[in-house]
Image (cartoon, one colour):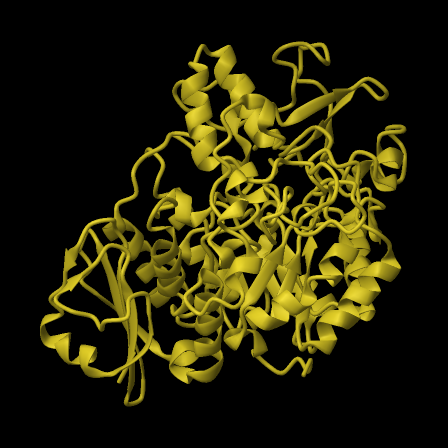
Length: 567
């Protein structure tokens, strides 16, 4: 059941677990490995093929585990290596593979490598990280003295001055997450050795965090250089400067040769800022880099142009359809990662759907249009239940460093707190990180203690216990979608053609493989939507495989009504 045959992941569905919020076995309010082990039958019943574990390595938890201090140990808050071995065995017994999160753009500032690196300018590991003296004519630690004018991802400067050696170190994210210097071959060899260690332990692949940031462009002198500061800003966006750097393909091809080749391991690259052209280079079958990438383009369609994540704008469905279709057609020689939710994105049913009275058909229809595209679908924990955003009403309820830094920066600029809270309620990463809602008990069956992040009060109505045996539940809709991918080759291998590209309410497309045609038809709005497929009207006469509404597709789709029809 666990053989890794060539391209096995093309018919697979991946389930992402954010361990801190999945299931707590010991009552400390934080999810852990034994909690996951206790819920494996839930995953087996859902029918997923792969579990992707967000980081559970040893970590000071400055960024919820993405600041790793030991790549070859489990943080005690989550359990032990023995627990992880038991989890791997339990997954494999159920025919489920394991995808580990690989975070190697940066480490924790408490990692032994960085402790050595910062100890002196002549330490052998000094150039395992990016160090630079203050800007000429400036005193270290004073305004304007940073080596470049870069702003990191969390609304703070990308350089921190270190008093010990009188130099700055680079961190594209929080100051506790110093960037590794991939120009140094010793760094790369250490990463390859660590990856091989995990493969030997039984993992089946890697999801590679911000992997397209590892190659930084340098000037003729080998130093990093200033970027362009946009109007209204004081620093240049570092991620835009370094994304898809000059040696990124060389580094990924080396990783493939050294670790991945010949083992049919799944490799998934998270690539913020990557275009379709970039993705073709990352995933082309003759490139030997990664199997698929996470695109962010569709996740940015509800922001104001040039305004960044928090500048909210309404989603236009034609724009979403055009973007997804471009990637469907443009990656014909590569492969798509298909996702709405993850640990960094809000809940789709709240973001673009209806998380009120029509939550169930809304959640089902957003799932339907995603899962039957060409690519590998990802289900984020709780998505299969139709979990919603947190709807926090106070800044004190948030724990996410990105959200808190954004709020602090906006408050300092005089932005009204109500406006900040609204943006956070829509886009904060904490929306995805509230505990999984297992049942209607006081802490949703997540913990017997006090959860690290408040449980959503709507767990009384939205929970797994109420859905497992309900044939009309969101959970069982996801089960059927996953089964359709396993049972119908047209879902995996069929061509893609978009229908009704300009319709503001209806998302419709057809997948074709030989004489087999699969129509996906969904009203992604809260209003009735008339449908005229014109020359494709005959597609409606096939076998209905899955629907949100018991009556077949008529000339007008009800709000959030969707159908899957095989002919």
